[in-house]
Each structure stands twice: as structure tokens, then as C-alpha cells.
Image (cartoon, rainbow, N blue to C red):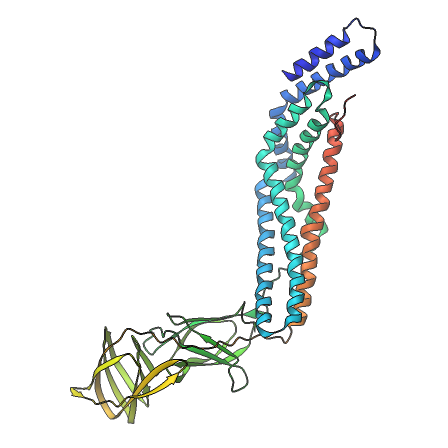
Length: 437
């Protein structure tokens, strides 16, 4: 109707008996505008389908473009998290100078991530609101007296060019950028696992110590209530291939484990083969050569069938101080146990020793308690800075390349699309400036 109104007003002005050349000129222009806008209105559906047709011819699509954007976002986020992990580990180790360098690298990646977010925003608006944008452009184009023709032509051109051009961004980027390796902690690994006793049951809150080359542990971590532990980013940087000897401390005793040596990366269970954790604050340590044939654990009761293979073996009963042991039976004979107390990492522990000679025995222990040992251990973390400076230089170079690939190239491509939109708007008769002739 606006197109018809514009054409009718033009016809009236053109046919007016007033002998003014400017009025005749306005009449011709408005008749032309009415026809042009009518063509745009009639070609609305055609313009919508035209974009899909050109994308099909060029072998591009919006789903592929979104997948490409998602892949780049994933790379940047993974790189950013990896750098933050390394920064956290270096901060713990006191390497503040290297932390400042990582802050600079993080800012480069954050800038690239902001650019990706901007492209996401533009593409979402273009893809989801293209028909509405085109409608507004045509509406402005059809307003009489050319009051909205420039803006309408510009909006129509933008809706067409950006809808076709945005999915072609990967082709443009691929032509001008070199393949970028992701920033990942591929030089570093982690050690994850759990501490279990002779039966494979978890040992809660065990202290796991890792030794490198000295008698002092390089790493000290405290397991959780399920016996699980983790050594790795963000608190530790362990180079791939590094080997550590492992020792476990629990209720005041140090235990060797199987395996005794782990190589980064490693995941599995560390078994304490000479200790049984009965639960509720009671443990039994086996010293000597013996064989356990069966174990029965129930609430407050432990029954062991074992055979001493050497000349003698010792059973060490460990309990937290609040735990009460009602009785210990060897076979059917009750054993009087002399408990001695000691402190370990903030815990009050009591121990009792029973020596058995060669032979078969059934050991029964009944007790009361509901306590879980949780020592107060100051954890110790490890950062291998042998080649960290070289690695930081590599990731800084990669971060700069991200800035080029993820910020500068998309920005240049958006400028090209904007210039193409301007040219198309000129062709449609509007230009980018709103003007009244």
C-alpha cells in the first residue's frame, strides 16, 4: 500500500498542471520509487530463497558455519583453561614472573574469545531475524518522499549479503591462515587413583607421598573419604614420563604400595597389601609372612582366617582413641591387649601388638565406633619448571596467532561484507546516507 501511495503521489505530481520542473522531477522519481518498492515487495519470498540457493551453489551452509564457530570456541576455551591451570600451579610454586607472562597470554586469548562472541552475536541476529530485517528494510524503502529509502536499501542489502556471506567466513579464514595447534597441557600429565587395602576396599583419608630423587617427598596429597586422590593441574605440573616412588601413610604407619613406582600419566589403584581397614576407625597391620584365607567384615565385627608361614608374625591393631575394642579372640581364647597411645597428624591413635607363631588361626575382633580418620596434613605440590619457559614461549606465539586468526581475519571479512552491502545498497538506489532530494 505504501508502494501504491508513493506511485500515486508521483503520478499526481507528474500530471500536475503546475509548470514547475522540480515538481515534475519529483513526480518521476516517486513513480520510479513506487515501482521499485513494489518489485521488492513482490520479490520478498524470492529474496529469502535466493540466499539459500547461493549458499547451496557455493557449498556452504549455516549449520556447518555454526559447527566451525563452535570448534574454534572450544579450542579457545580449552586453551584458556589450560593456561589458567598452569598459572595456578606456578603461583603455588612462587614463580610470580612466569605468572605475569601467563596473564599476558591469557589476555590475548580472552580478546580472541571476545571476537568469537561478537561473531556469534552477529550470526545469531542475521540467521534468526533475517526475514524480519528484510521486511523492515523493504518497509523503509517504500515510505513516500524517499524519507527511508537510503536506510531501507542499506538494511535490505545487509540482510542479503550477511546471510550469504557469513557462512563463507571459514573459506576466507582457511585461505589466509596457517593451521593453529591448540594450546594444551600436552607436556604435562596427571596421576589419579585410589588407595585400597589388602581386600581392595578403599582406605579413607590416606596420605599419599610421591618421591622424586630425595628422601623428602616431592608431593604430599590427602585422599578423600573414598580413598581417591588426584595429582595434576591446576596445583601440580608433572612432565610426561616422570617417575615417582609412592608411599602411603595411614594412622601413624608408613606403607609400601603396589605398584611402588608410577609414571606420568598414570591412573589406577595403589594397594596396601599388608593392611586391612575394618572401618569405623579400626585397622589391622600384618607384619611377617602369612596368608589370609578368608575375611568377614560386618558392623563392629572382624573375623580373619589366616596362616602364619614363617616362624612368627605380628598383628598390629590400630584404632582411633574414641573407638572401643570389646574383645579380641584367637580361636576361642580371649587375648588381653595392652594399648599404647601416640599422636599422628592431629589424630590420637592407639596400637596393640599380638605375636603369632607358625600355624593356622582364626582371629575375631568386636568393637564399637563410628569414626573416620582424617589427619591434618599440609599438602605439598610439585611444579616441573625444567622447560616451562620454552613452553610458555610456544604458547605465547600460539596465542598471538589466535589473535590473528580469530580477531583480525574475521574483522577484515566483516569489513568486506559491509563494503559489499554498501555497494549493493547503492545498486538498489539508496546508499548508506539518509537523504531527501
